[in-house]
Image (cartoon, rainbow, N blue to C red; front, side):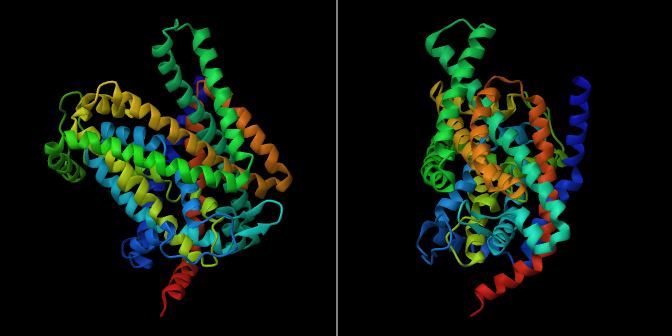
Length: 458
């Protein structure tokens, strides 16, 4: 098993190597230029549309623009915003945050293009509603001979849904809750007790998730449209409170970010130091993991939107990386940098928790734990829909209900398992989703440009 895990890790390093990262960022940069910086000049219009200020919704579709965006964000705003940012800073230095911003900005153009294509090529079934996403625009947009690539994308999405969107999230929640219950009830931390508590958490968690996903996209949209705004506001306000306590350190934090983006950062405190390439590598990689721009998942959610104009939903979708990375991830980074926690030598969610605790002992830990719970729950229900549509595409509508039941039943198993191998396999699945999706977006980009010009023409 150790040899197999080593092989998987080596494969993971290859598929998430410089070529994949260059393809992700390069595609976003190319689309930014072709679409004339649409993510900057039309951002305010995007906000007006999903907020309901610019109402031109259609009867075609299942979710409002806001609910469709909430479902997409439910899967992207997650542990990557807490652990991913911390890991980027711990390994790449403060400059990694700058490259996360760059990834988010160009990723907005990728999200716009992919969601626009998802609406152009979506399909409707009286039994299962609207379906769309890369598997549909690959097959219908590029032609039947590209169907194997569409099937490959859908297969990888199902694998990632079971792993990244299910077992990994369940495991994180079970770990967090077990530590909390141990503090509250002071029971002996024997292996048997730990497994029993985690299993109980997993069973309750599965019941809550099942109650949501069994109702399909409409119920997922209803829950996501309430949970996502709440967790966003709660986390941002918590972070702003910490930043306000260290207001004098904010200028230095931004100076560290901009300086570290182009200059090596010397070792200090528990921080081991980082070069410019490390800042770029970890900033871009964690930025992509955070907002999923280019992976092809968000277009699946946006395909359910109530609109006759693909461009309108593309505009809504492009605000996702802005909210996820440029706001939420920046809050996490500023908390870590202004408190000085980045020099502690810690990494991952431990570093973020430590930073909040430095500002508000105990309450900081509680805030991060509560945030993780909401982030995790929203990610699980969001990813369930991605797997749901992929199963329908590959195996037919009759398989969708069985997938939903199995998806919920898998959560208790994820709660008690060791998931290092699952993490690695899911990382590979994510990269293998991105590659066919980006190829399709690049080949279909002339259509995106044409639709954009048509929509904005006088």
